Length: 96
Image (cartoon, rainbow, N blue to C red; front, side, top):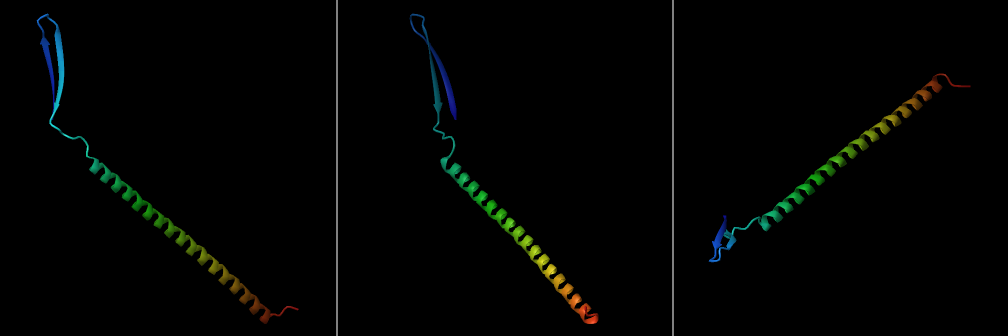
C-alpha cells in the first residue's frame, strides 16, 4: 500500500514550507520470474504451432504426390490398353 503525506509548516517569519512524503510498505511491483515464465511458455506454444502446421503442410504434399502418382499409373494403363487394342486389331485385320 502507498500513502502520500503533504505537510505544511509555517515558521516565525510567516514563511510556509511544504513537505511531500510518499510512504510505501515495501510492496514489489511485477515479478521478474513470472514474466520470464510467461515468455518461455509463449515461445513453446509458438514452436508447437509451427511444428503442427509444418506437419499439415507435409501431409498436403504427400496427398498431392499420391494423386499425381495415381494419375501417372492411370495414364500408363490407358497406353497399355491402347497398345493391346491395336495388337488385337492387327491380328483381326492385318494391315498390308
